[in-house]
Image 1 (spheres, rainbow, N blue to C red):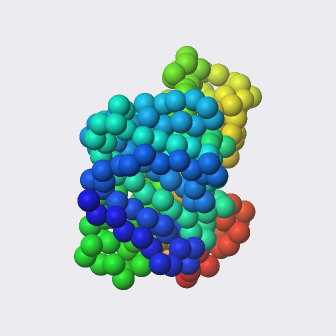
Image 2: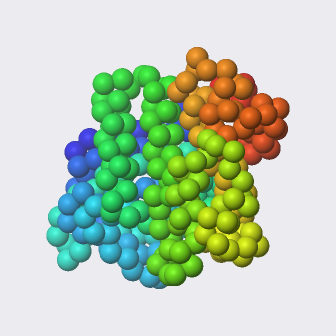
Image 3: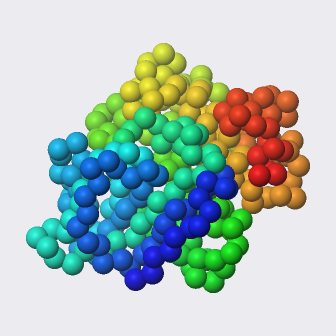
Length: 267
């Protein structure tokens, strides 16, 4: 039942505060919430979470991301055994995480995607065990975990027709074609709705327009490449994420992160 804690939170762009797997979860109440992002996933058994006076079941293979300072409590169903994996995280880039997660207070992960998130947690736990002082690797592990949420592996009570018919297909198109010369108008054409209508749906479900989501997704992928592909030039990474004009890439990167790609890479 390993659990690991970081001793240098907020010194890196993305940083685990704590992480663990195969953890026999005890009942817990947080009236003031947790100060960092908190992801919790059931490995075995079933848990009950209380958020905003509503109860949610966290069955085996399902997970939930709770944003900072959201009051919550959880316990095992009928006091039975409940085993979880989890991660809490922040970092110097924490203010920008809302661009990935939107404005939702809690985000539930679908079972088919939660398996990939668990694999990322297991990998990070292994690195904590074998390379606890490799801060760069652990920061990359944290970012890899975050990327799952930027790739549409989430659900926010969106089991309605508009989400399934229009929003989800566009998210999948962005994930598959963000590196191409893709525009918001082209995405609208793919689902046969007007740009205005699709943008309203995106704002309703994700808290941003189609263009803002596409831009955020590209910059998110650029951050990953800047950390993991250090041999590639800035303009090459820009092309990798769909920007043929390197000047425009740098402008958009600075707009979303407050720094240039070079400055981000040097952190």
